[in-house]
Image (cartoon, rainbow, N blue to C red):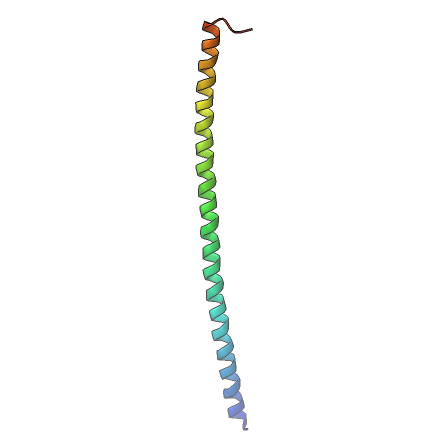
Length: 78
C-alpha cells in the first residue's frame, strides 16, 4: 500500500467519523428541544396553577368577609 492510498483511507475514515458525530449531534439537538418544550410546558402549567390559586384565595376572602358580616348581623361575634 502506498502513501497516497493510506492517506485516502484515513480521510475516508475521518469522513465516516464526522458523519457519525453529525448524526449524534442532530439526535442530541432533537432531544434538547424536546426537553426545552417540556420545561416550558411545566412553567406554563405552574403559572396557570398560580393564577388559579390566587383566584381561589380571592373567592375565599370574599366568602370569609360575608360570613363575618352575617355573624355581626346575627350577633354571633364573641
